[in-house]
Length: 448
Image (cartoon, rainbow, N blue to C red; front, side, top):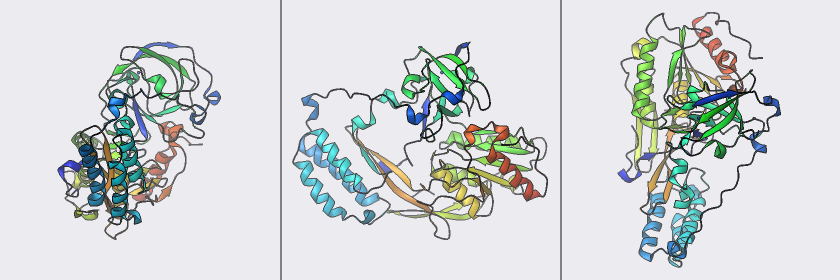
């Protein structure tokens, strides 16, 4: 169960996602662009600066009673619900005394927001932050229904030597899907500019944008696409692997929402039809969004009993798993779980529990070590407090915060650079599953 957090603190949020949702329907295919090797890396492509809109003097004034109420909400929220009762070694009472006087001394709203942001930053916790309304920006900028191409882009690895913007997921019904754009493809140009910038891909609904797209091992291609409004849901992908149809594949990029629980259950049920299932690969790479309830529901297929604990300032809750309707059918099916450095939060907890219970072989690279849970508190005037409010630990008391999950089989390659048939993580997972049942793995292409 999730810790019993008050109703005003019940929006689960583990981190601002590393991936960014975009939205693009084919109009025409054009001549291929220069090869991917000529494409600058994302580190060489700087996003243009956005000049904030001017604020009038009238908008800067904040009445004293409002300032006091806002300060109390932020300070008390951390005092009462921050996961560490010692507030990371800070004397939070003294901090409150100091900043309360500063907040009372000014009626400038932007100065008040700055003081609250500064106070929260004293915790030195990257997942506990205060956001002023202007920090959150125009709702159109982060509303997932804006006009775009219908793709989830990986920005976490686009820093040093990754050309372009790599695609993690393509939404059903989006124009990118219709254009034949797939996960693992990269956008290496926008309107002839070899610097692919997110701001240039977005745009008003109904307008067009020409993208240069490349698939692993193939030549670049230009596609002119229409920007559309979509309401993206990151659905799990469940199927049998082409490399070995006796092995099922379940990819979950977002462990959140009842629709995810239902899709996983439906997919795992479908996998049981037909030829016997000799193994299952659970792909949690780049999975950084979720909620504890989905983890608990998913675990019911594979383990049972007390598998860990959530701890918070309002009490501890054991993670007690009841077997679900699929548990018997999957009891003898070997399980391999894929993770990488972008596997965070609920996905890390899921992988750690399956490993700790001896139920799965973990394949990949060390996870992020960001397993604490955060909660958001919305204030009336549009500001927001995000604070880490609960933690996770295994039955032994071991916590993964700042440590992460260490895989049983280490794979360090950048999997988005490979087609699925050559994916080093999948190759290693198939080998691990075959070893568990004492068989030779199905032959796959070399990962080079």
